[in-house]
Image (cartoon, rainbow, N blue to C red; front, side, top):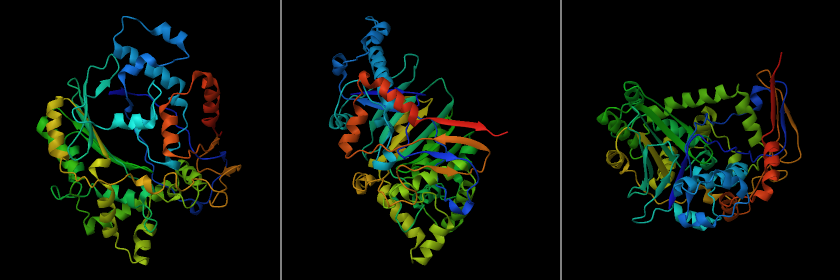
Length: 453
């Protein structure tokens, strides 16, 4: 199996939400509830290729372009890189992204490899077989060492050793997000994200992780998306025992958080403050309006951020113990078999593997199914008459907080099954359709904005 790592490539993602939204003057603040979508950070995108031998069988209809850049003396990896990139240019970057509406996804499925493969083949390639060697294809000038593997508890790990750097960083992707909030407790996934930073059994002092990072030139943050929650940090990695301690502290988030009663009450203020700030953000207001087009029975229509009304007053009114609900959510979804860890540091791969095993080997594997199994392809994302804003053939005019003019045109791309979606993502579009898709892509990402004078 070959793992292709491509840095700094941004695949244009197309909103699955329908028609035009045009901004013009202020909406009343009480008319919008904002959701938590913190600014995403650029990440490494990966694509799994099922069979190295299939490179020779790829039919590129851009053969003239390929022949101009291909050199018979190139090493196979170099050739494969160019084939993959051509395939990406002709297909992957043009494939509409409808994950939030119809099912789970991860970064690997956004990029498509050159061969025509089925979803089953790709899933088999992603699965970590016993003794299987996974090869990482990287840019020619990238001299860093990589290794990807799986811990005994099912945690997927990608390591990168960079001896030329003094900075270390780690990120954990937990495959559960706000779409899995209980209907009775909107914002619970976001609240859980906040609470993991406030003490663990091994390190019970609240905010001790942030203080430890600050004393070592580091920072940390997290965000809750619709189907994933991501935690990450960076710090000075030149001192081995300091970085290993940071990983131990970080790993304890996912193996033994405390969720103390006192911290639970205080952190509600932070959640409520975040929501209040979002109410004055045009980005979040527009985002919430887009969600109002979705079928109200679909989990994407939920209020993701949460506030005191939903997390405190609402739970009390329903006789729900918030802390117990929080622990229940954590124990249901935070499982090693649905987590992926990435670490980059100056240390060697062998040393990083020791650090990772010690810090993350105790995360329990609850062997849970993907959360989206409960709703993906079962609940239609758009149904006429079941949304606050009409789903189709409708123009919304919004008065913004800031002085701006913007036109956004969006429409849904809905798949009937997981197999249809995965095959669409994995199989490159023939270059006969390239110009058509490029035109559609330009329309779907069309946006005009200018300052008002």
